[in-house]
Every structure is written in structure tokens, then in C-alpha cells.
Length: 266
Ligand code: HEC
Ligand code: HEC
Image (tube, rainbow, N blue to C red; front, side, top):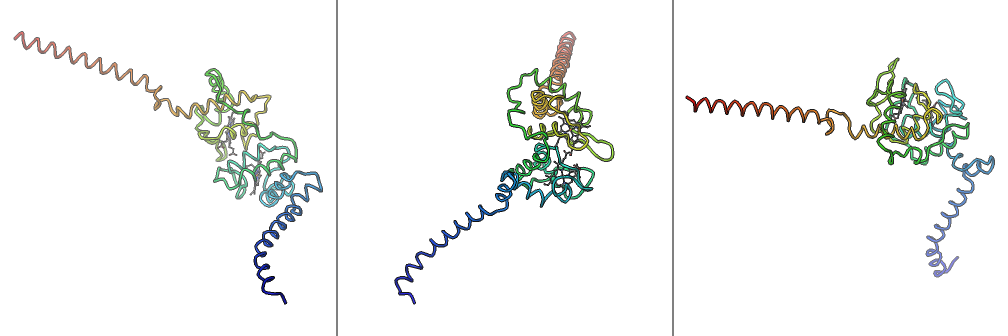
């Protein structure tokens, strides 16, 4: 049996002991959690191990436990981190069920989770990496660069996405989506990874500077959505209006003048 004083001390120590136990549990968990264990066993980084664990829960039903593919989904060997970032961040993946096309949905995964899976898929086979922002920065482009972006877009992209990037129908009920509001990162990744019917454009076909020009062209069009409604597009209309006002107004003045002279002549 303990004395009253020791029991009091014991009670005061309880929160401390609890905090200590929590810290200990945290440390033990960190030391023993599957991620670090796998990392220790195979030399896999903790990030890749976490990505793999989430992949096996969320994606393997269609893409296979090791990304080898199943009848429900293609192999992801060699598609690269950029394809995963694109598919998950635009919320095409995980697909709810196999279908003709994976439309955009509301994003459900954190950037960290997406990066973890992307790094894991990158280890399956080399593929395009997630680009750094310098690779698709379009802020310093000249008017010539943007004009070149427009040419490249008309040559390589408008067959499916239309000249103004409004998107268009493809055979078998599929479609190339409208490109307004797509983040520069995702434009870059779509070009490099070629989702669905879209071809892959490698750095050999369209180097990074040209990708930036295409992005600059698309973003420039967003600021001036349709020539008819923008200020620039109003030019000819304004001129026409001015000509009309001056022309008709002038005729009216002349007519009034003649009429008043006639009236005076009477
Ligand atoms: C219900 C089945 C299903 C699930 C679940 C699924 N996918 Fe897919 N995935 C597909 C199909 C089918 C395609 C083929 C392309 C398409 O239809 O868009 C595909 C395509 C992809 C591609 C493009 C491959 C390429 O060649 O560019 C990536 C990357 C991808 N999936 C990643 C994932 C990831 C990561 C997850 C889990 C977060 C996931 N998928 C979950 C069915 C699925
Ligand atoms: C042969 C037709 C075709 C060509 C050519 C093509 N695309 Fe695509 N593109 C598609 C299809 C189809 C999709 C939709 C894929 C999906 O939903 O998985 C797409 C998707 C995209 C997306 C993603 C849009 C979004 O909503 O996330 C971007 C960005 C894009 N394309 C840009 C381009 C650019 C830039 C070019 C030229 C360098 C180009 N595409 C050439 C067919 C094409």
C-alpha cells in the first residue's frame, strides 16, 4: 500500500508518463512501420515504399500488384512519374471503372501521395520525369516565341484539339478535351506522356523551349478568348461604326442644310 503523498506524486506524474508513452509509441512506430522496413530490406526509399503501398491498395486492381498491367488496365512499366502525376492530379486516375475515357474529376489525393506513387512507378522502368517549373516557364517569352508556339500548335495539336484549343470529337465516342484552364504543368506532361489517343511528343520532337512556346500561345488565347469579343477584335467593328456615324451623320447634316436653304429660297 502506498502513502497519500506518493499517490499524489503518482497522479501528477501521470500526464508526463502518458506523454512519454506516446513519444515512445511514435518512435517505435516510425522504426517498425512497413515503409522503413521495406526501405531497409531492399534499398527502396521510404517515399517509394509508401507509394508502392498506396499503389497496391488503390491502383493494383487494374494495373497489377507490381504495375505489370491486367485485363482491366495497361502496364505502367516505363510510363514514368510524369504520366502518374498527370493522370492523378487531373484526377483521371484511379479510374472508378474501366470505360471509354477517363474524364477529369475532383482531386482526391494529396500532392504528397501522388508524388509517392509517381516515384514508385518511375522505379518500374525509366519514363518521363515530373518536370521542374523552369522546363515549362512561359513568363519570359517574346511575341515571336508565342507566334512560333501558335505555329507548332496548328501543326501538331489542332487536328484533335481545334485551332482555338476548344477540343473536338474523335472516333468511337472519344474526344480531345478543351485546353482552356489546363495548368502549364499538365500541358507539359500531356505532351510528354500522350494520354490515350494523344501521341507522345518526346524532347526530340518538341524540345522544352517549344513546349513553353505552345503553353504561352494557349495561355495568351485564354486572355483573349475569342477575337470577336476582345478589344483587339472590336477594332474593325469600331471603325465600321465610326464610318457609319460620320457617313450617315454627314449625309443628314448636308440634307438638313439643303432643306434649310430650300426653305429660305422659297
Ligand atoms: C478501374 C481500373 C483502374 C484503376 C483502379 C486505375 N487505373 Fe490507371 N488506367 C486504367 C485504364 C483502363 C487506363 C488506360 C487509359 C485510359 O483509359 O485512360 C489507365 C491508364 C493509366 C495511366 C496512363 C498510362 C500511359 O500509358 O500513359 C497511368 C499513369 C495510370 N493509369 C495510373 C494509375 C494509378 C497511379 C492508379 C491508382 C491511383 C490507377 N491508374 C488506377 C484503369 C485503371
Ligand atoms: C490524335 C489526337 C491528339 C493530338 C494530335 C493531340 N492531342 Fe492532346 N489529347 C488528345 C486526347 C484524346 C486527350 C484526352 C486524353 C485523356 O482524357 O486521357 C488529350 C489531352 C490533352 C491534354 C490534357 C487536357 C486536360 O483536360 O487535362 C492536353 C493539355 C493536351 N492534350 C495538349 C495537346 C497538345 C499541346 C498537343 C500538340 C503538341 C496535343 N495535345 C496533340 C488527343 C490529341
